[in-house]
Length: 307
Image 1 (cartoon, one colour):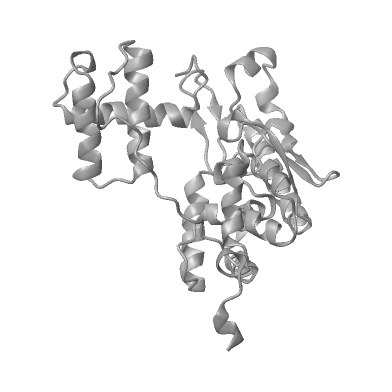
Image 2: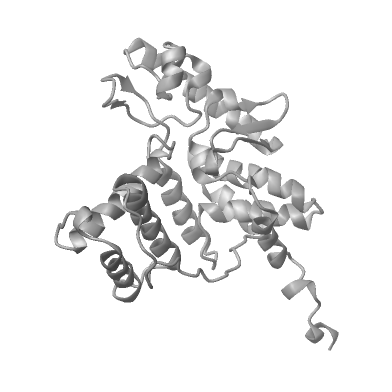
């Protein structure tokens, strides 16, 4: 997986599914198993455990990789190994009033993260993993590095986020200065970049905008470093804010990204522009937001309004 440049999260997820597959079959060696065992495992996920179609497809992809790439014995075509069909669902979208209410309820770094996710259409991990060099105040934009699919893109920086972001960078600068005094080697970087720029990890521009509260020891180098703030910090604060505001919607952090796209389309933005800002490879992915515009079902006026 590292040879194919899979992300660390994908690697961890695939390894976890392979372990669960092995334990399901009483720790048998995968080389002694095949398509029938894979079909039985996927069937158990759907029937006995009742997992979602996307979860079953994730397990299928991990086992496909195991047999196709690692063991190099591709699985035959068997019933039960085809991708499960995911139901079509419209995304949950917050109104601007609800977004404003949530932002007023949140505090500190989670509040700024929520404002950036709504104001720039960022995914949660794209937000917490921002580096100092990726924020351009003069151009009022943020550069997203290695987004979903390994793609970079530019997104707007909302004017309302400028001052809070400057304050957050000041706090991050103080953390960075303390780390330098205490022998912390700064933020983690790719191994290839570390070979080219050995001291880059200690430079200010490579530090995280949202540094973690504590440091860790890098297992590969033995250096003490500081990672970015964990995503669960924002997730827990956001869920608590939804409960406090009594918003009767199943809202998550990703709902802010859905709301960003929908509100842009409602304001007259071109769908191709929204596609670029979201980083979608296909405009059909962006088209889903045309079904939730604030114009009634499918953009028609209810006859009950004429009574």
